[in-house]
Length: 305
Image (cartoon, rainbow, N blue to C red):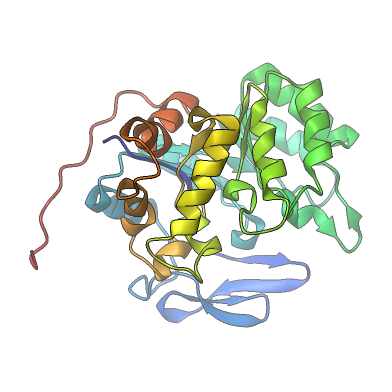
């Protein structure tokens, strides 16, 4: 089965400030994360580098053919590195650029990203509820950027605040830019009240949803995440399986489970048909992100088998 990861992250150095709190790498895969030490990476990634080469090794082992690389403020801007990744591995990765949306002037920054060849722009919208004032998705500068993206055929990836807080803003964006292809991240923050309001945005023709981080959101339940599968079933019944895509949120989620475990619980579930699994795990992302023909990595048996 063709498998494409619609939500992953890469960085050479994770270095950022969010809400005035520092994020920086520590030894052995750990990070200082907003005042707390956490295991950000698997412990064998000792140097804090989360590179394309290590990810490709994980992808090949788990038989994942391609991946979409998104960005988040907690990792710092990774545009330079991701531009290089896309240049070196164009058949395996679709990468999103990201602007500094927390201050004015990002429209010109978005234009530069487009000129550099980025085919999508990511907005961590949940991080825009700033103490200094909320950055609205329907603000004049945002709308100008969305019109530019629509005209140039870029994809918007957006992660919204919990529930329906930013859904009306997205409805305005969708109404004014109906040709703008939009991907809603983190499955609408599925474990939070009001998550289905984000999913329902996919009733619009050019809006899609990916489930990156769903194993993190259901971490208390843990593998095989039956409630996560049930949520995917509910969303598919609401907007159609063709609007939904699998994503892992690599590498953060593989501190708790293996990379393959982040999708094989879906393969084993009887709640989805084989055709639905094929669409959700790969075909929808292949079509949306315009991946060409992709080989399925050859499975090598484990020595322990």
